[in-house]
Length: 262
Image (tube, rainbow, N blue to C red; front, side):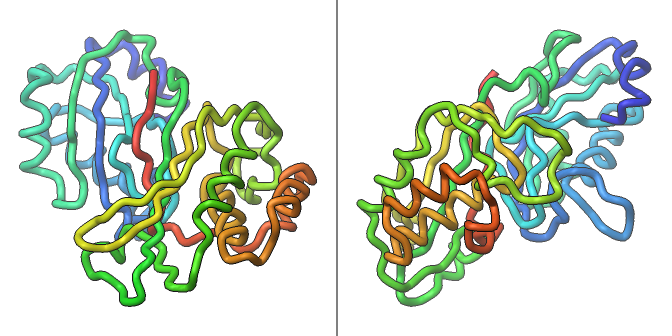
């Protein structure tokens, strides 16, 4: 939602919140982009206008990066459109491309903001473990066929739990002067099978995430799993609050915004 239009938008009768899922492969992230670049927000705003009959400007819980996916992204917008909320997902399916889906719609209080009202988020990161790639999983996982020590990776993830300064995992390019202190409530690794593919899935539930924080955590946890660094070295890098000590950011396609809590 454009800041200069916020007060004007809030004069409209309704505040609608949507839970949205999307395959981020073909988009330049979620946040609106100037043409010729296309982001998920560009498509949603353009197509929702056909349903509601007025100019749509969205606020979103998270600005997922290019190639990152979402199952539980939350957006809100103000409208004078009269369509019943229970009809919105079906109507949206008629105007949206197949890789963007409105899973749920509800009318919310005028003061609700998908961004500012969020209390915490869960991100999942999937790693495909099979020797051969899998055409049904490749778009949604990082394929690592070399051995990984899953127990050591889980031990590394436990180190991150609590309220800490996560500067070691903050990439350049995020919002300036953002407080690097966050709370990670849970951080774990588990196995799952997706379309026959054997995956290791990293789940992180936190109060919020810095720019590229989830993917940078994955990078360092994988370094532990590949025995490139020890758990003691992981702890020292975490404590150093120095992004330059963390290897290159994990690929975008493994990451998914799973759920936002309010």
